[in-house]
Every structure is written in structure tokens, then in C-alpha cells.
Amino acid sequence: MVHNVIIIGSGPAGYTAALYTARADLKPIMFAGLQPGGQLMITTEVENYPGFPDGVQGPEMMKLFEDQVKRFGVQVYQEQVTKVDVTSRPYKVYVDDKMFEAKALIVTTGASAKWLGLPGEQHFGGFGVSACATCDGFFFRNREVIVVGGGDTAMEEANYLTRHASKVYLIHRRSEFRASKIMQDRVLANPKVEVIYNSVIEEILGDEKPKKVTGVRLQDVCTGEKRELPISGVFVAIGHKPNSELFQGVIDMDPVGYILTIPGSTKTNLPGIFAAGDVADSQYRQAVTAAGTGCMAAIDAERFLDAEGH
Image 1 (cartoon, one colour):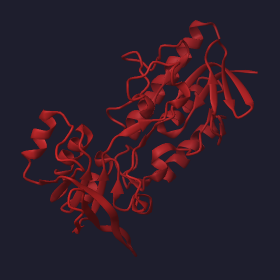
Image 2 (tube, rainbow, N blue to C red):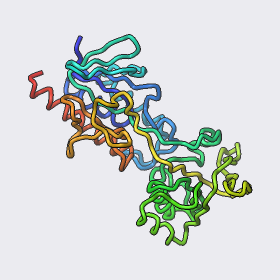
Image 3 (cartoon, one colour):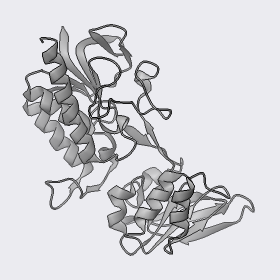
Image 4 (cartoon, helix red, strand yellow):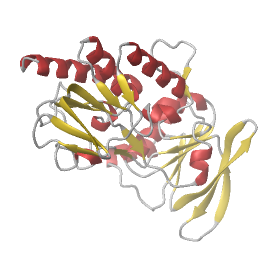
């Protein structure tokens, strides 16, 4: 059986694409991956998604998305796609040795934040440790926080956090930043930012009841000296990695691995393959923008199939 549309990945982009293609009677199937719901599954409170005036827990929100697509008959497989063959159409999607065929693919595999690899990152994830200042900065009003990194992302996060936090420490393991000069100048001129060079976080410190971050142990990489810094939040800003390995070498990507789309659309360089959400978005990375591009991908796919007479 050749399906009209296969959606690879879930999250707000995948579920929105599924909702729109299902309502267009395209009978899509979806492979939700090993972390169905994407990054929102490790997000606690979501307060910036329209329609939830009291906020909503990330996993709860994704369950609502999933329930909604199932109401319209979408088959959601909690499985990871292991291989794709896009050399000819219909396109072939493999889950281990099982093969599925589709006239169109919508790729919504998302992106993953890069982490430092400290045990406390997972333990206090959503309880003071974050990789998204835009998502979580609001929770740290009038508190002191740390941003880790030295590129443009770290500068942006540090600058943004000064709107909420009383003080932002910017921790960098080297003696100079790799960020663009304009971004560095903006941060260095901000009176709320204090830069700590040549330092790394050795440990994230916190309480258990209630679960929260209380500080970090820093180590000077030159002297080996250690000290504790009391803070309420740790923002890791060392970049994101798009989950695009399946399509490496077959779909056009930027140097980092974000899938390139034709401006104003979700079309990739291959006919009938569309990309939405964070796998194609290095700029915004928000649930609401991902959902918007999921809608675009569904409409693009529907029009593509219509034009082919399906």
C-alpha cells in the first residue's frame, strides 16, 4: 500500500501537519520517534502558547495534540524511522526491516539542544536548568542566573535574560568569545551581565524538596581553582543540533544540518518532501512557530498531491 503522506517526527510541527493532512482526507500516518512530542516532553511549564491562559505542562500539551490527531483517524506509530530511500518515488521509509511507501513526506524530526554532559542537567531539567531563555526566562524574574557558552546564541540568551533576571553571569571556558563583535559589544556593555572567562561548570547544585537549582561549582581551567556561585537558573547555550541525520546527503542542508526550504514554503529540493519545525528552523525554535510551519507543510503537501492528480 502506498500512503499519501508519511510524517516523520512529532512535536507541534508533526502533530499540526497530521491534523491538517487528516482533515484534507489524505489519511496520513505518523512515526512519532523515540521521544514523541519532541522537546516539549522535557519542558515543565509552557506559558507562551496561545489558548492556555493558566499555562500547561509540556507533556500534557503534547498528549492533547496527539489525542486531537487520533480523533481524525491518524495512525501514530511510537517508532523510530531507521532509514529512508528517496532515490525514486514512491518514497520508502523503513522502521528496521519494515518498509512503508508514500507519495509525499513531511519531515518534523526537530532539533536537540547540545548539553554539557553534567548529571545535574538532566536531574534539574525544567527545575532551573534550561536551553531556552525565550521559553523560560520569565520564571527567573529578579533572580541571578548563569548562561554557559561563547557564541552568538549565548550572547542572545544572556542579553534576553537581563530583561527578567537581576544579574546574569556569562560563563566561558576560553579567554575570548567566538561570537560576532556586535553581539559581544552588546553584552559587554550591559550592566547586568558579568563575564567569567576561563571557567567551566563542574557541578550543578540544588535542593530536592522543592526541587530547584541553588548554585553551581565552577572551576578555573587555568588555575584549577574551584568556587561555588549561588544562582537560581542555568541556561546552557552551546547550540542546537538538528535531527536530520536520516536525510544527510540527500536533502539540501546548511552547514550545521538544518534542512533548507524554498523561502515562503516548506518545500525541500526534492519533489514531495517537505520540512517543518525545528529541523528546518535555526532562528525561532518555538512551539507556536513549529506548529505554524507544520500547517504550511500540510497545505504544501496537499497542493502537491492535487497537482499530481491524487
